[in-house]
Amino acid sequence: MKIAAVSWKKNELNGVDIQEETRKHALVCLNKSLELYLNLNYLNESKNIYYLQARLYDEMGIIAHRESAAFYFITAEEAGTLNSVNSLIASYHINDLSLYKIQLALSANFKKTFKIVLLPPSPKTL
Image 1 (cartoon, rainbow, N blue to C red):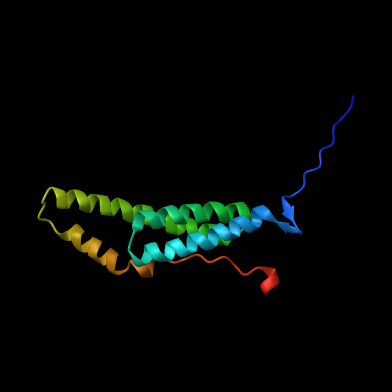
Image 2: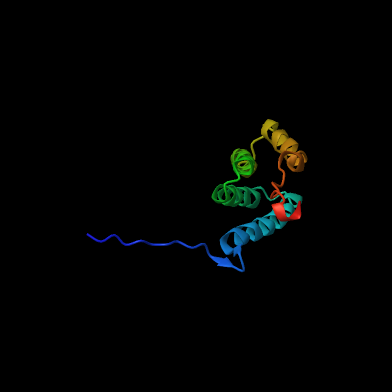
């Protein structure tokens, strides 16, 4: 009985892990996009970015950042549900403005509620 031995090599170029660098670059791009979306109060797009960030941080093994991004994703998801309800109220011309006041309060605190989860500095830059 013969056993085949397989050696798995990282995708490296000049000693740099290409996949890891690609993930870091993706996080930088996502953070730039997130900053723009937060300034524009685009909740759904921000939610999607938090989801992607959480996935990337999970793949990189940075658990604290994964948890932060996941928390903001869930918060944005819940806020999106509230916005959907408010859209229905507006479309049916319901006069109860209590939910509208909640939406205005959420909009005013949008930038305070959602934050950009930054990539920790690499050991080379310390």
